[in-house]
Length: 427
Image (cartoon, rainbow, N blue to C red; front, top):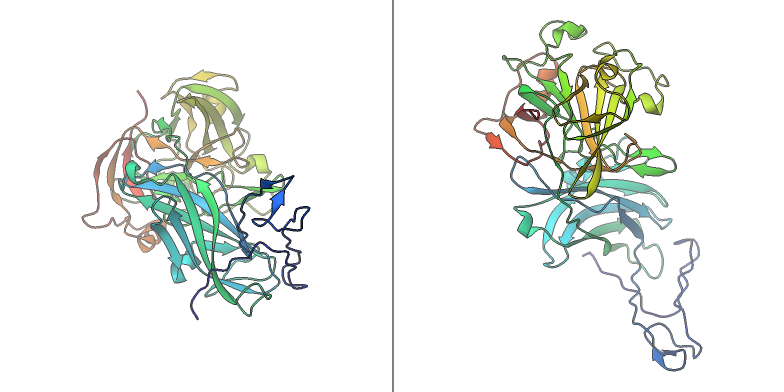
């Protein structure tokens, strides 16, 4: 049976008991006319309102902000929250992001692509389909890309194809497609920053955007709402001249040659938070459950406020080596781009040395909205040849790069997941 678009006429209608758990009614004027029908307040024409029943309620997490990746494409990375408002089990068949002006489908997830880009809240495994029981919710992580800024839509909307186990009520068929969650696309440019690190062969771990990495998939429930602070976060580790992450026993800090590397301010700004009382985590092991406070999740860290193009941003430098932040900065201190703010470590929620870095819209590392950024200068060495290559490197093997993949100098672009780049701080 083909998907059907369902529209509810502007009349007084009560949903079947137990189907949606609500009563849907059209307001009527004094003369008894429904919306779009009669006159209101002595003759004024009532606005025509087309009511569309959308049993899968949807909302976007943020107004998508475009950013240019090292692939040369414009990325719009954001999340879509879906809630099954009926009591009937539903299967999400596909999700499309559609440009509002052109009606062009800019991104579509179905089948395995939908599975890999979604997660049902409260469940670790969605099985072979994305199924929502009555009242259940799911997140879908989108990466909408276009070739250049001129091709960006001003507005996005979303087409959700859904199949219920049976028709939920007389108003809804068992299969339908609904249009939901229209959102403007931000015209705010991503801030241009210097690199926080220096040297060759820095691997972009857990970065944006196409894959749902641990950062992209982090929906932090804080203070009664979800935050996506790590949407564009990067875990940077450095490969040695043999393209290895470590040389020696992986449980020994001395096996990681980049441990203690200087960490630099990415822009002129003010230090607004410093945490520096946490010991390094032994490599190869995670902190025991319940041993970290929310403020210690990033280990020893620095938060820096900076301004650009009339907007305020906050840079988060995390998992720093013990004592290194206090050695270089204090709260209220003004720093210039390139100034040292700490040293790379392994403190907090981590199992191996790396620098966690992201840009956000508040001074709270987790209770904030993650924002895109671009590096003013970097050299793309290449890209890891997939997850298998990364897993082998994490076991001590040299990292294999995609043969004949993109490389070369890059300006004003954001490193993408599994990029290997030569980084340069401000001088």
